[in-house]
Image (cartoon, rainbow, N blue to C red):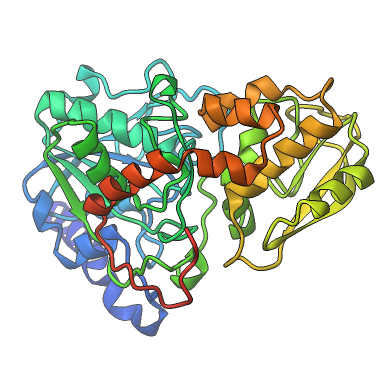
Length: 416
């Protein structure tokens, strides 16, 4: 019996030792940018020492060597992981629709869904928690729901007087370029937590600081900062491995196009879901692709080309139906204004297919009534963006106070 006990202790010690020293043999294979979880690991998890931890995470919660944040906290020897909370698409990041809660068979830790019966942590979920930790990769657009989950969790942590820790990660589409228009204050929702521009140019740690200050959440907020990240870095500059943050976000091209192309998703236009290239193609059965492509090319959108295509989605809107549309190719990422691309597509669709295109539904994700009204009246996308410049300037001043990382770019600075 004593031998069996010693054997269990030895195995536990070896597991703990592995998770402590694993980074030491990674050597030159470590990426240039280390995430908050890597920094927390370097700190021997001291900020969480002795705490019962609730972790908000999904498949993107990984350290530089690929170890999951779940495993690192479970075997840290410093804290105890008691609850896991998962956002939209679930813990695996592969699910669409409502996600159910369950208990992990391996660890017996309850895994509560924040995209099921509740989108906020409940009192039951937090009853044994001393600290809430957020470790999820954002994509850099206002309507990507992980940042609303961040805000909701901060609110509930504040109510329960539980300290809130954000393990920071890069904004994959950079932290320099910011693109409007702003969300109207009366249009907040799960796809618009609070007034922000469409492309906010902030990390989740910076967003948490902004939310806490501007929404007066009052959370006991602690941001575990990254090492090595510059505002001008796109994800491909970090040396990190790409992990799809959601089922239809499969590469950097799609991530960069997403803030503009996704503006169409609430309308009767396919944005490529159900194809191999979501957010890289747009279309509908009633669109003539060559005419559509020609009009978009005439709009002279910087940094992008539009080619006519036919495609047939195998799921989502227009499943099994042949759609005419365009394939979008980024030619100069430094010049590309993703929201301008989205507004240009909307403007051309309204011009060519006024009777078919559901222009009024654009407001659901654009979130700005005046912008939609101007487009409907024939205003150019550039005019629409200029019309919101006062609110954008106000946001930029407030945003500056929430920023953490160096604003000096390694490359030529993009125009905001």
